[in-house]
Image 1 (cartoon, one colour):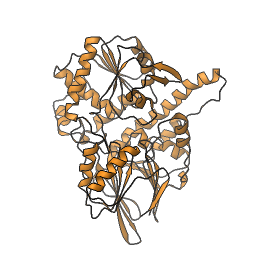
Image 2 (cartoon, one colour; image 1 turned 180 degrees about the vertical axis):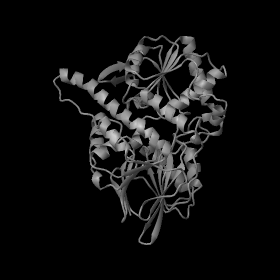
Image 3 (cartoon, helix red, strand yellow; image 1 turned 45 degrees about the horizontal axis):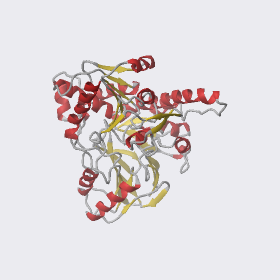
Image 4 (cartoon, helix red, strand yellow; image 1 turned 45 degrees about the vertical axis):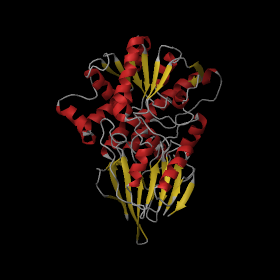
Amino acid sequence: MQIKFIGAAQTVTGSMHYIKTKQAKFLLDCGLFQGKRKEAFEINRAFDYFNPAEIDFVILSHAHIDHAGNLPSLVKKGFNGKIYSTFATRDLSVVMLQDSAHIQEKDVEFVNKRRKRQGKNLFEPLYLQEDALKTLKQFIGINYHQAYQVADGITLTFYDAGHILGSALVHLAIKEDEKIYNLAFSGDLGRPNLPILKDPEQIPNVDYFICESTYGGRMHENPLNSEDTLASVVRKAVSNKSKIIVPAFSVGRTQEIVYALHRIFENNKATRIPVYVDSPLAVNATDVFRLHPECFDTETNEFLKKNEDPFGFSRLTYITSSDESKKLNSVKGPCIIISSSGMCEAGRILHHLANNIENPNSIILMVGYSAENTLGRKLIDGEKKVSIFGEEYNVAAEVIVMQSYSAHADENELISYTSKLDKIQMREIFLVHGEIDQQEIYKKHLEASGFKKILIPNRGYEVTL
């Protein structure tokens, strides 16, 4: 059996791992690479390490675009197999992949208007909505804990990863030449005590573990304090009559922030101000959340028992049309605008940033991870000049970074989770979905705790088990 690490290898984007056994060729995830525009465009369009038409099936850990977003390209290039996921991931992918295609079409249309005036070559979207719709027909939903045979001698079981709605740790029992390989893939590992979702489940002991390492060398703030921190930002905006611009992933982070604001206003921790969720995807994704209470933790289900909607309250407005979105430019503070994408690489958030980033009275609240070279990372790193739609802007707005809402396990949480696995049975751990400095720290921790062999593969690295 061979594993080839293609995406999220020494980087935190474009998750994709190719596995070849005697029975099948398949992928763990097929995510969009995000970063430098030209590099991302080339990586996402080309499948250099395998022929998509030869892939038998895909196992999808969760619906985030950096894990699922390049599935339509795979289908466009000839893949016609099944895509296995949890039911919630399947339902989220229905809205996310169509939205991804729509955003690409609109962003390319916007940029091409300027390029045409400048006499430059025009861009083409990576894929169209029709490609996304075709992809969605290939999904197969599987319950957590249900052992499912995806090919002769290959059994798949999902466990709750506690990262976003429907996110899964992947457990595979692969029989080859009378030998059984127990392989696990973390996808993105969540954190204990996050709002809305259940805590991550422990997988059974395995021989090989492909483990994320996003925050392998960093600690987060306690998620139990996040609500108070958010309330203090709202109070500041009320005092200064500021607009708070929140770049947030439409799936997971948006719902967490809305839920937290609901609690803040209900408990009088801050004056109730208008909140706008300006993302058609977030609106549709929130509807999917409402369909899957089986993924919620006890506290959120108590909300539901009281007939309260955790994702709705007075002065909250969900916006879908572009005309309504444009009207937000003239709305006065204090108010909160939550919009995607979380890494500020596409979508309506770019327009809100362009309209507010040079206003010293505005607040840009960063509540999630941003990969290297993205606009979100530049804001987090404190850069004073940034490019939006090819135009340069001075960053005069106050940028506030909150890591307590991160849905990725931090250094201690990763170590705690992995340390529960049998060190004797574990033959090798592969660290993915992390930048090399974080991975090196995490590797040292794993070695210190008794794991014998830890590998940090680069893009294209292949290993035979």
